[in-house]
Image (cartoon, rainbow, N blue to C red; front, side, top):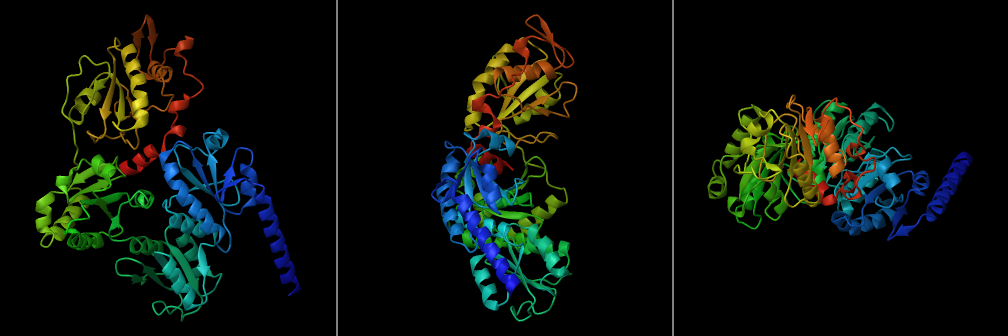
Length: 531
């Protein structure tokens, strides 16, 4: 008892010291405000800390802000207390560079040191709170009563409960590894066999969920791999409705092959359509994620090229293979007419054909245009192979989206470079509207805008992604260094050619308005939509 008393006293002293230490850190609405100067102090003062790296001008940072404040309040009221923080990465560039911040907002979780893990949860307060609590506490919580289990089931969408032989035994160790491999579920255990009627023996388990059939009783071996597979398969809804809030869950998960169903949720067909789609979803659960895309998600709908008159319609996408898309055979009224008859079987057959390698990708393309008078040539899907791959020229190709802010900023610079290199017949500087054109070519994997790829004349199979400064000097220097030998303004340039002209040397300092670290969260979201 004496030793326990000392231990409790020391724990209390440490807790008070920690609170007092962190009290010196500035706050805004309950969120700790970190800087280059106080960051390490804050990490040392907290066993765990979720940190948002943001930019004041970022629209998505502004949208996240009220949810982040709500989450801070909930976590401060939790037992134990957890804190969250934020860093203005435009003012504290040392931290942005230190942790490789490439877009805003970026959230990273620190547990006792500066080795961070990326936050991959949702952007609603409740998502943030659940994620932080799960990551901060023990991976597997030991419970003693049925009431504790019921409370966990009420508070969480997915709960895996297991009966183990000992609090610190081998079964608990197995569950710890299962829990650490999943960020969306709560894993709990007990040494008692009377907590759940669905798991009454040692090494038995049951998964409770707030969707589909409500629960799944586990019947496999109590080992890491089968338990993890069970949790991944049964813990994922048959149909997930897309929203900006749950986009990280959808696009950040392990399953990179998605069957997308585009719908108008106000129409009468919705209930029967969901019932029909759950049949192929169940058949390929764990292999293919089935996602409902409401017509109100216009950015996603526009990206895939659908119009209001196309609904309902479907498309299968593979994000492991350059974002390949496979269009389903019918849509609109034809699809509605088959909802209550053959739709479930037709979708199932389509998915089986896809897995058998019998479905060709669907590629959209604008019509070729006469760009003979343009410095920047216009490439479309239909002429990509002929003008880029089969050409004997070095090709610098920019993939862009008309609505992309940084694409608009790059456009005049890109045009200036093209005009400067207009007399170099061995180099083509070109662009492609990636929202209107798609290509299927190894090495081309466009996940964000703008993406600039260089196709060497002698090695078109291995395009090089341009990652230098997006200014005239950076781009022109890249061409002078990587293209085949050429003449420009009386000088010789190209791969292997040495030149000392200071004007041709790549700038050491990045252009402030165009660095990747300052790309807006809108563009980072675009990457999620394109994955």
